[in-house]
Image (cartoon, rainbow, N blue to C red; front, side, top):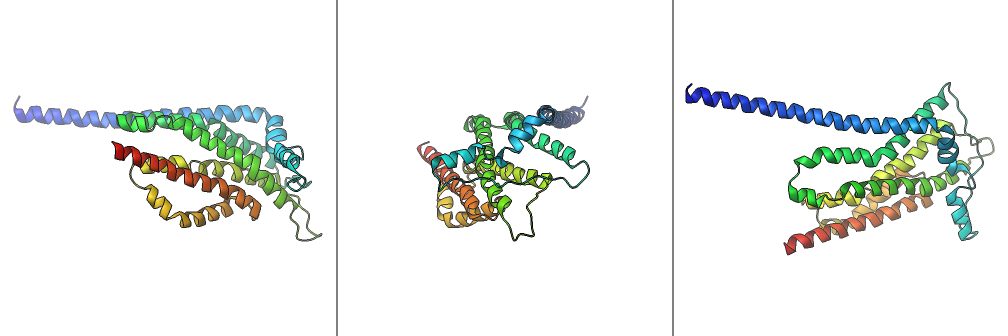
Length: 274
């Protein structure tokens, strides 16, 4: 066999190996996605079965006067005491309660399964990282999970009660009666929790952007005034047209922004010492 034939055969085998490696990569990704979807499905089924606890305790909890947030603020003083308005949730379409039940089960399945979902995502990308990148990202799953769950709990225990108090009690006249649908109530509750959980990932995002050299602490510091405007806009979108609710979401976002600056400064000091 000539050298040309040998070289051609080796090149062909290498191309086949690369192609096989690519498909193996896709197969691995498929299994990670499958396990993540399975985790959501299992938790969603559990939530669906536990209907009474899911709705009477979790979903309808923020509209009840004995909810933790109302009791906490009333315990502080009469000036800070807030109470939810008394309103009934109605359904206008056939099957609305069933489909809302499915929606709630899915979103709660996603929230509860989030740490495992991110862990599967991390297992997929980790082998492609260099050793120093793996060390830099050590503990990322735990940090991401804690930030997300903290944001969801903040939205549930802080934003939701204030939003319900304002929106549920707002009136334009005696001819209009507040009788929100079950679907709208669940949609608002979802909006106050899951996006807030994602917003709380800001320090982690800043950490990786700083690690890649895409942003610096001086950049964030010099553009702090623009960040304030963006945070206020985000707070206005996420929360209802209530100044108190907007302030409540803006304050932790400001804190997270300042924490991001501090995290990037630590990275920059480490690079200078090395």
